Amino acid sequence: MPTACFNVSGLDSSKVAALSQITIDSIIRVNAPGYFVDITEGTPVKAYKRTLIFRYCGSASAFRSIYTGDATHIYVDPANPGNTTAAQSGVNFPNDYFVYSYSAPGSYPITVMTSNVSHTGKDVKTATVTKTIVLQ
Image (cartoon, rainbow, N blue to C red; front, top):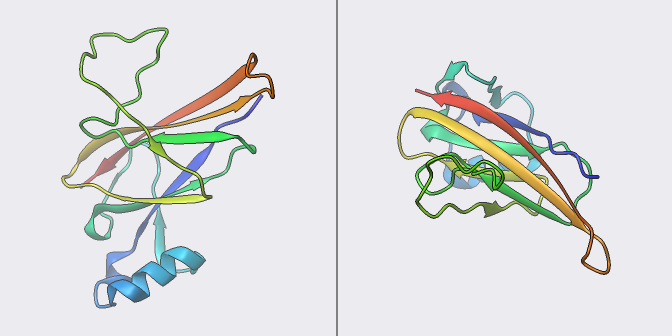
């Protein structure tokens, strides 16, 4: 059974605002210490250009998707779909980190879903975890 886990951080505006985009991309890629602010669930935060870095910390999985919580990327539990009628989709999350920029401040329910499938395809195991972040 896979386990789902992720951490969220944003770039510290005071440290990266004057840097080039190439330098910022390098900082994200190597996870350079001192340039990130950890984002705690439910605590309002200002991140540079509302760009967040999601780092996967769950167990190994064959498939992994992230639902970023904006317009058409909201996770809907198939067992309890509620009133959601619009099509929703996750984004493939194949690496240990995923970078995403939000277009507006707001509260976003972020969900990571992982799954493993047996070699015959008959046994599917999934795990999900959701955190709500608040961007200013």
